[in-house]
Image (cartoon, rainbow over all chains, first blue to last red; front, side):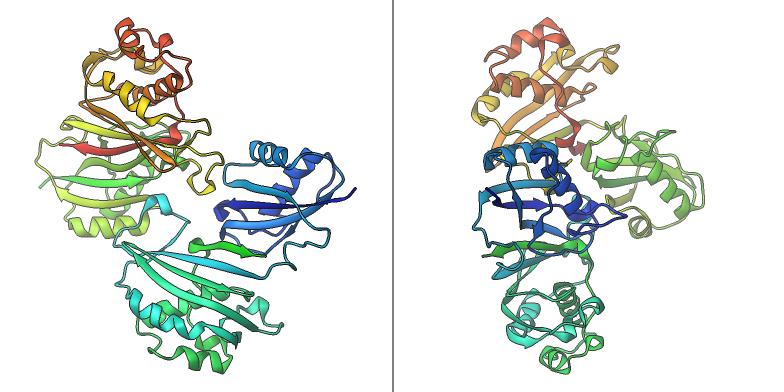
Length: 245
Length: 245
């Protein structure tokens, strides 16, 4: 019988050229498929819930694959984790319905963008957060971020590679919270455009810097013009945080 | 006038073959000396407070160097941090007395050994902690660790490379504390032998596993025999945490 296996994993993306399989560089998908192919003695192809860019991380990422191998789910976790490099880990494995697809069955996602706001950087968070040494008004960012809620055409927050598609998405919530030196942007929605969270973060930082006026975000969204929004924040601080099914 | 400059830095040691200058691989010292030589336009040699092994980290590490260049301390920090890779950071810089030497003036050090005790590893702490998936009794370790206090001959906790010297050291305090999934060993003393903290950690873990009997540590110390102590824990979890002058 063909099984449909759903696996939950987390990975630190620093060493990888994103999730999606690459021919000339190492992606998370290459590594995971190689491990599962060894465990099942079959050529495994996985469906990821999301592409992620080079250097982007996942605290929660789901994928599914089909196999007729009878290996128990528990052994996939244990065997997988013993074969995976230490920056990728499987935390769950279960039998899914035949029609489950990690990407098409997904109802929503939450991303986290971590900003460390201090004078000197933290060498232990290199690649894992954005260091920002200017004064940062998290209250202002939180207020500005409210305008990003709702069903809107987010063309202005879409990177060049995603421009061909319909850019309407629903953002459930976009909040900014400070905890000591760390300022976290948390954004959830039914789907995200290419580079959308990184452009939203860069835009909020430009509001903080006065390069974009306060209260200007609704106008930027309405204009459907990428050039009006701010810079694309680096991948280092971006985490796929939660995937909803 | 010849200045004696004292710098405080932190570094993530994962990418380096320890602090001490190497000819065939990259050590922290190579990188720092290259940066300071560029800043001062002189060939700079630094005196570190400690050697550290490959993969070992420092939350606080001091070194000193001499120069007749007039560059202000503040510019050394700012310029240094702009030239250093993002896993090394200068956090302080000051003029020291002429006889200050980062190693010989040191009165004591504190090391931290981080153990993450959970079933699945954390991909974001790869290289930065020891993952330990068996049950770990922090209370037992804390009790056993008390025997390590005081002025004693620690030959049994000295790695092969350090065997020629006098192995008497004074440990001021050795404690083990659990905070959620994390179990931290904190040890301070006037000096440490080669691999001493890693062997103490490995020995305590073997007591936890029942491979070394409870209450056996005084006997192991008294025997002055490395083969009676436990394994050498990996470098990943070890941090030079504080340096006392």
